[in-house]
Each structure stands twice: as C-alpha cells, then as structure tokens.
Image (cartoon, rainbow, N blue to C red; front, side, top):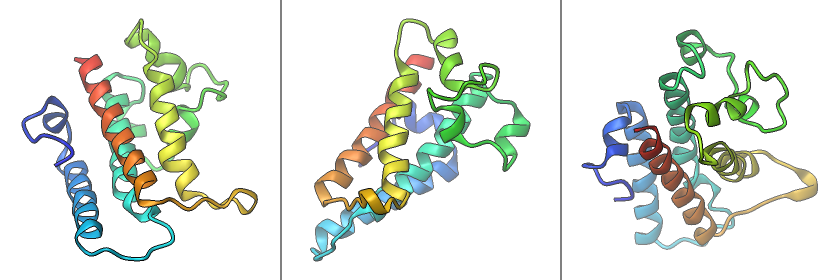
Length: 156
C-alpha cells in the first residue's frame, strides 16, 4: 500500500480519490505479478495523476484559492492556474499558495509533479515522444504520493 490508510493524507481524501489510488495500486500489483513485455508503462500513472488532479482541486478549495463554482465546474484547468508562467495574479494559484503556506516552496513542488507526472506523460509531442519504463512510472507515482503527503502536512 502506497498510502497508509491511517495516515493524515488518506483521511483527507474523498472516496473518489481513494478509489482511483486503489485502482492504481491494483494496476501496479498486476504488472508485477504478471510480467509483460510492454513498451510504455504510462498507463500505470494515469489513475494516480487523475487522483492528483482531484486532490489539487480539493486542496485549492480548502485553501480558498478556488471557489465552489470552480471546484464543481468544468472550466478550471489545474495546469493553467498552477503554471508559474500564468500571469493573471488573481487567478494564479501558483502565486497565491505561498501566501497561505509561507516559507515553503510548495507551489513549485506541486507544479513540477504536475508537469512531470501528467503533462509530459499524457500529452503527445511528436518531436519528443516519451515512453515510460516500469521504473519511471513507479517513480512518478511515488512523486505524486509524496507531494500529496507534503501538502497535507503543510496545510495542517
């Protein structure tokens, strides 16, 4: 189990996010039990990446960085509001996180994991086609779980 079911993180998560994480763990267990010759293990990252998006929306709502309309709506793009290059200060979650959690570089860590474990995994770039080895996929999954733990600990 990647996340202890007695942890602060597990208790913070809603049931939908927990379900995605459990699905991801089942996929990881399956690939280790039934060795396969697969050229790209990106699929192992997907449930964790999706859970991470849900986690970030919940975190941003709880920190009052987004409102309920944005949380439940279809318009908010985590990759946009978390991107350090996004220049709209009022809408930039990246710029506002340090005001809620001073003294930490949580914004950068959340963004780096988002970029590496979601954007670079699930977007197709013909000039930079990326396949993940099993080890790379596991490392990205661990990065997601680690940053979620970090955020929950810092938020309190």
